[in-house]
Amino acid sequence: MCGIIAYIGPHPALPRIIEGLKRMEYRGYDSAGVALASEGRLWVRKEVGRVSELTRRLGGGPEVGIGLGHTRWATHGGLTQVNAHPHVDASQQIAVVHNGIIENNNILRSQLEADGVAFRSETDTEILPHLIRKHYRGDPVQAVRDAVQHVQGTYGIAVLFAEHPDVLVAVRNGSPLVVGLGRGETVLASDPQAVVAHTRQVVYLQDRELAVITTDGADVQTLAGQVVDSEVEVLDGDYQLASKEGFPHFMLKEIHEQPRSVRRALRGRLQVDDGNAKLGGLNMTPRDLLSVQRVINLGCGTSYHAGMVAAMAVESLARVPARAEIASEFRYRHPIIQREAVFFAFSQSGETADTLGAVSEIQIKGGEVMGVVNVVGSTIARTCGQGVYVHSGPEIAVASTKAFTSQIAAQLVFTLMLARCRNLSLEQGQAVAAALDGIPGKISQYLQEPGPIDAAVELIASARYVLFLGRGFSYPVALEGALKLKEIAYIPCEGYPAGEMKHGPIAMLDDGAPVVFIAPRDSQTEKAISNMMEVKARGARLICVHTQGDDEVAGLADVSLPVPRSTDFASPLLTALPLQLIAYHTGLALQRDVDKPRNLAKSVTVE
Ligand code: F6R
Image 1 (cartoon, protein in one colour):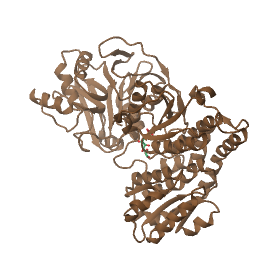
Image 2 (cartoon, rainbow, N blue to C red):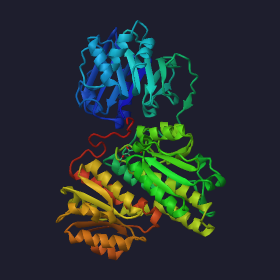
Image 3 (cartoon, rainbow, N blue to C red):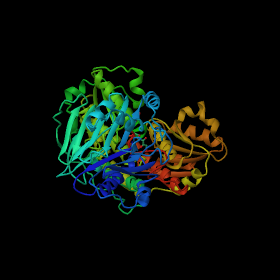
Image 4 (cartoon, helix red, strand yellow):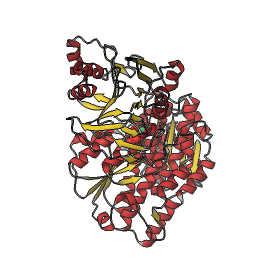
């Protein structure tokens, strides 16, 4: 969460900082701010709201070649101008931007208050400039090093000293920071996205490393002061400034991109003739695959739902025990890590702190964990060292859509490999590979004729509560549909396994309550139909996502949303689509900011 940018070089820093903030705004958009060092003083501006709000009120800043900026996702303290970053010390000489959480905030705050410091904001971050000032004896690097020794928690920070307009100091502990090494200019950011406008030569800081940043580059040291020989890497991902390509919103564009993004997740991986597949990033031979006794998929939010679908596919096709787990719960329940288990960390951004925490826990206990990640070079991808890139392309809308289907598609490829070396014959493997190969075409077919989404939106937009139901592979889809509607339209709703409905949530249904039922034709359709009857008997209005031509299910629906026929394990790649469209259009109908829903951020880098 939160975007950090800092620039030092021969050009005016302010427009470069603003450009970087715009590129990182998806990380948090509660407030934004900048600080420049000019003639021995700090020039600081900050505003509540978007970067555009900041630029609107900015006026011209001093034309200096050093400064830093921040776009915030609030943790400590409300959405106010005072709580926006950068934060400065009492003498207004030291400015700090911070991403992360300072866990011993209360203790440090009390100690500083006892020293006579008067805090202006409610943030944990404001500790930092005061603490650095306390340790400042004329050497900016030493002051930062001494100060952070007292800080517990996660942080990526950048520090600017008015008295030292030739240096920036940055420290990383748990929140990503990358240094871009340009020609005569250096850029620090929390995200490569903000660096590529200047250079593709980068150094990723590691935890408990400090960087002394000048126009000549960055000296990286440990917090103990030992020089680190950091590897210079070249960014090779797709970091184009995102365009809506004629769509009114990124979310709609990304929904419509799914024929291409799912195709990219499969491309070069399926071996249809052999009924098999290959994932170059996995370094697993058939013998390694044969020794896998358990698959555990970890993730948060939408990525967790993708992990659920993938785990069900592993059990159903490869007959290997598999489950999905919520990453934020995983490490705190002292998990058992078995040698013959394979863990996958599902993450679109590759930066989610909860998922990264789970990865570290597995690695500490000697387990094997691989990434299922979209953003190339992200922290989870690099920490895992091996895994599957899902190649959905940059996902800008905060609500995840195309990354969900790409994660599922990529892990169905893995499932095919796992199943093929066990219980799938050549013919069965060919059938699975062909089914997967046909999915992008079917997604395209559905998106050309998405059915009466407007009618569904009409039932949902005024509802007090919406229930999403599904059985088997459609249960995670129900969870995902409910999550999408919550985040985009702010309507109370929940996803439930359809068979569980009668054990509680049925009490929520009354006359006219919309129930979205995901019921593609599969082995559970007859049971699903019984659940639909139970719903209808309570006066609820049924919105059914079902297989094209399934007149039995369509006949029960108040709103019928047919999707092309597919096999059960691939059905979520199709049934999720109408739910994404329902969330998008309901959000629009209720005048929500669909690309940047309230309180959220694209990249959740705090626990
Ligand atoms: C929902 C959504 C979130 C993310 C979750 C994990 O639309 O976007 O629930 O799925 O925060 O993020 P990643 O996948 O980046 O680890």
